[in-house]
Image 1 (cartoon, rainbow, N blue to C red):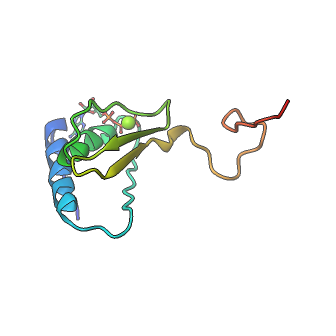
Image 2 (image 1 turned 120 degrees about the vertical axis):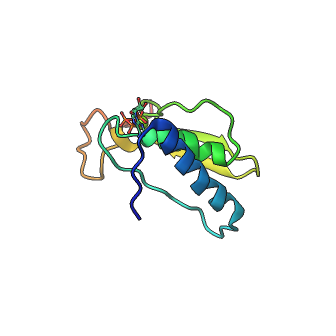
Length: 105
Ligand SMILES: Nc1ncnc2c1ncn2[C@@H]1O[C@H](COP(=O)(O)OP(=O)(O)OP(=O)(O)O)[C@@H](O)[C@H]1O
Ligand SMILES: [Mg+2]
């Protein structure tokens, strides 16, 4: 399906409609939705509308620097908002700044 949004409002409204449909469905397994697009493409704007559809009233910011934020839907379900921009793949070298190593003293 293709949808062309002409404004942030329209993106949020569309996402909210999708979320409202999903919130009524009885999901047996966790649902993962991947959002891909260039910087400023509207991914976070989409998330703002989406979580609204689940009754989340919190202000949504891009979790780019904290990677993940947990939100609680109105019906008690957990929503994890993950921004994988700074998360490397499994091929990262151990000396990469994105790889955190713990050493016991
Ligand atoms: N149709 C549209 N849908 C969504 N956002 C739009 C639209 N038109 C213009 N914008 C603007 O584009 C910007 C999208 O920013 P947003 O933070 O949602 O993008 P992003 O994909 O999350 O970027 P990043 O990868 O940097 O996190 C906002 O400033 C928004 O107002
Ligand atoms: Mg974003």
